[in-house]
Length: 162
Image (cartoon, rainbow, N blue to C red; front, side):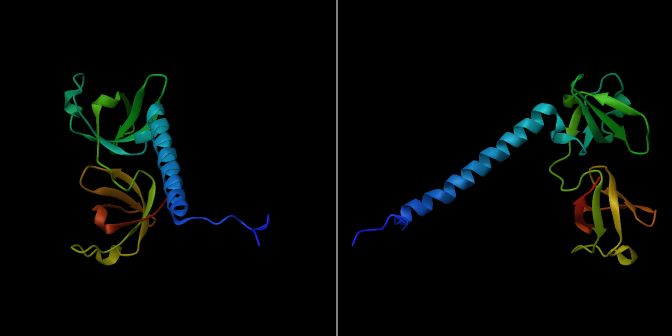
């Protein structure tokens, strides 16, 4: 008896091996396209932290950490803010040394936790939002209203809500 028209054709082991690779390749290409689109619009580094570099007009600002607030596509510059300074500055991308791939951005909701090397004591379990990063520690505004400077290892990411 031959195969009926309603029965699926037999699938070989080599065909099964190919399909997961195709799906993985499609996801990889989609992720790469999204990253290229973000980079093309300048959105790739918004809400991240950086350090000002090579600024000839205001050399006293070189080395200062900033938060990248938004990208002005018309001017092809980033609006940045220094910690505790309400005056924003517009800077070109080459004037910003973006801190490495840190998992927390401005507005990230976090919980304070003990790390392998640091006990946070009475701060343990408190929740707040990241407001700044200076290249070493994050400034976190706790729900209680107090601000604390903490290492990344002491912060558990709860989500990006802002």
